[in-house]
Image 1 (cartoon, one colour):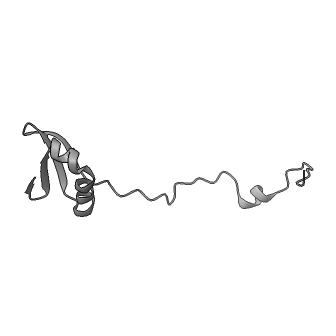
Image 2 (tube, one colour; image 1 turned 90 degrees about the horizontal axis):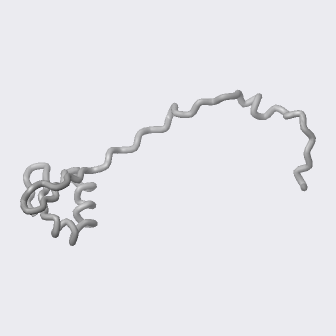
Length: 79
């Protein structure tokens, strides 16, 4: 394993043996992880982006009064 600034470089065999620990390190530190094969970069692993807020994503198609208004059909809820 080679740590240079904000990047950690590991061989593919080391990544395979320590995947869970290395992934946890990426999440905890925010550093990118470069996995190499025969000394050449194969894949880059980085921390996941924070989820976007869902505030304002809902569109109301009717008012509360419309939602609670009688529908004009008789029915028996006990059936």
